[in-house]
Amino acid sequence: MLTGGIAATIPRVRSGEISGAMTDDPERFEELVREHQAMVFSMACRYLRNRALAEEIAQDVFLQLYRKLPSLESQDHVVHWLRWVTAHRLIDHSRHEKRRPQSPLEDAPEPASADSMSDADPMLSNMLRELVAGLPENARVVMILRYQEDLDPMDIARALDMPISTVKSHLQRSLALLRDKLSRQKGVGL
Amino acid sequence: MNLEDELRAALRRDNPSPGFAERVVARAQSSARPARAIPRMMWAAAIAALLVIGFSTAYEYREMKAERASRDAVVALRIAADKLNIARERVLRRETPADTREN
Amino acid sequence: MRRLFLIAVIAGCAAAQLPAQLLQLRITGLDGLAAKAKESTDITLDSNLLKMAGGFLAGAGKDGKDGDTIKQLLSGLKAITVRSFEFKEPGQYRLEDLEPIRVQLRTPGWSKIISSQSKDEISEIYTRMEQGKVAGFAIINAEPKELTVVAIEGSIDLKDLSKLGGLGIPSISVPGQSKDSGKKGKQE
Image (cartoon, rainbow over all chains, first blue to last red; front, side):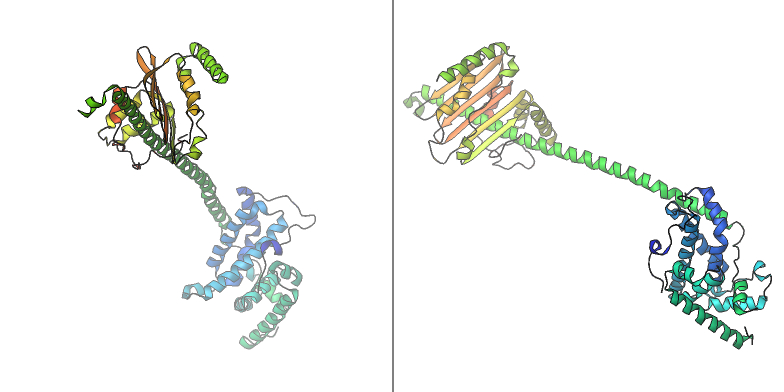
C-alpha cells in the first residue's frame, strides 16, 4: 500500500544538484517534457499495456508538473516528483478501472515498438511485458521502477514511500511468479 | 541471458508518439490561461459586488434616515401646532369674559 | 440672579453683533428632566435632515389632508428642535429650568407675541423677524405635568402651522409611522 504525501516522500534536494526553483516558463517546460517523456510514458505504457491511455496519463502528469514547477527546486526533485506522481496515478487509475466495466478496446495490448526489440527476443519481451502488466498494482510499479528505471530497492522504497522489506518482497515474489509462468507457458527456463 | 536482463530489455524505455511534448505544452498553456484569468475575473466580480452592496447599503441607510427624519418632522410640527393653538386658546379665553364664552 | 443677568448681557451683546444664523435658539438646561419624565420627546432636525425629510415626503406620493401643508412648512425651515416631557406628578420640574432658554428669547431680535401665565400654567410664543418675515419661532408651554419647548428656525407661516394642530394623529402617510410615533428618542 502506498502511503504518505509528496512532501514526505520526495527528497527535496540532493547535494550538488541544486539548480534553483523551477519556473513555469513554457520553453523550459518543453525541455523538461522532452527530457522525461520516455520515463513517464514508458512507466504508464508498461503498467497499462495501452499506448493511447499511457499517453493520456503521461500528458496529465506533465500538466500537473507544469502547475507544480515553481515549487520544485531541482532537476533531481523533478525526476523524483515525476516518478512518484506517475506511480500513484497509475495505481489510482487501475483501482478506478476495476470499479467500472471495461470495453474490449481498452484491453488491447500495446503494439511492439521498434527500439524495444533491438537485442532481445521479441516474443519473450512481449510475454514478459504481458506478465508484468498482469502483476498486482504495487508489485507492478515496483517491477517497472526496478527494471525500466534501474532503481535499486532503496530508491524504489523512497520513491514509493514503501518499506524496503516490502519492495524486496515484491521483487522476489514477482520474479518467482514470472519464472514460474514463463516455464509453464513456453517452457522457457530463466 | 537471465530473467532480470530479459526484463530490462523488455521494459526498456519507449518514446511516446511524435509531437507528444508539443501537445503537452499546448495543453499546459491553454489550461494555464484561464487559470490566470479566473482570479482577475473573480477580483473584478468581487469588487463589483462590493460596490453594489456598498451603494445599496448607503442608499438604504439614507432612505431609512430620511424616513425617520420625515416622521420626526411631522411629529415636531404637530407638537408645535398643538402648543401654538393651546397658547392662542388660553389668550382668547383670558380676554373673553366668561358669560360671552358661554354664549 | 447675577449669573442670569450676566448671561442676558452677554447674549444681548452677542446678538447685536452676530449674524442672524447664530441667533438660533438653543434649548439647554432641560437635560436632566428626561430621567424624571413618564414620557419624553426629543427631536432635533438640522437643515440636511429637513431636506431629506422633505424629499422623502415628496417621494412618498400619498398625501393626506395635511400633506401639502406639511411639505410647504418644511420647505422653508432650517432647523427644528423639540423637547417635551410628560410627568406622572406635578412638581417634577421648576420654572427656573426654563431660564437659560428664556434668557436667549429676551435678546434683541426675538419678540414675545403670545403670553399666557396663570398660577401653574405658562404659554409663550416668540418670533424672530428678518426682513418682515418670520425667521425663527419658539414655543414654551408649561403645565403642572407637562413641559414642552419648541424651537423652529426658518420662515414659517403660523396660520398654516396652526391648521395642523388638534388632530393628534398625523394625517400624512409616512411609511412605517405609528400613531404614537411622537413619543420617541433623539433623531441625531
